[in-house]
Length: 279
Image (cartoon, rainbow, N blue to C red; front, side, top):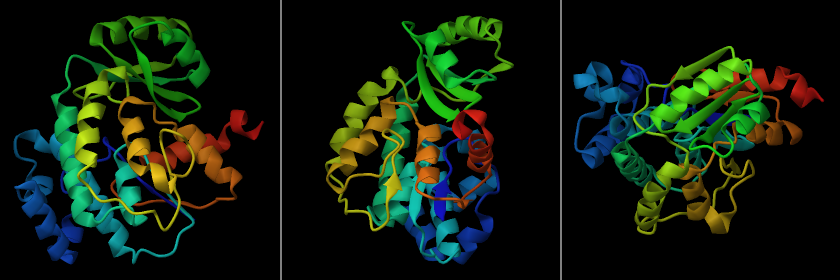
């Protein structure tokens, strides 16, 4: 069994209500670190904060972590997570403790929220190779290789608009601009990566007790490269297709998404059913 944790986009108002009540000590600890009432944030969504990166990331981390605790944290063969969810996976695998995870996602969210001037768009209906060729040499990067017919690109908004027309002309069914504040997982996040590196140097990491498949490499984290591998995903592509393929080749057949929503479950179904993978 592989446990997978979701990233940004899976949040919703009201998430975690039962979990906050079930785990008051962890909820209070997270709220004290963050400096605000996390349960109230998720319940009331004041000023739309739940969709703002600096609030979304801590909220999703805590809700997903509590959801894992609520399951009793049974033995599992692998952990994985999409973008932010990878930090939850590292926590579940014992690489960081809960308080460290909260501090890490708080800093990560704050730094990523500062980046502006760009966005992201999901391209539906073209293969990853077709999308990669379409943006090659441009100001856009491939941010997420999510499924064989869903690839996310990132970069300046004007470039995204221009690329959308090209991609639809090449056969894309949809090019959908995402509701995000910055071009995550692209070259434009490199300054954020550098700042986060300094913060990671202040945190304690331990070797994971269970393999965690990294977004940046689509392979399990090496115990001696936890910080470096985690940093690479900030400005690098999320290699979700390759990560799932790796797990399937290792004999994994059961994937359980823990946390809000079922986005990753649907992506995995797409990957498993794809002719590209079957061949």
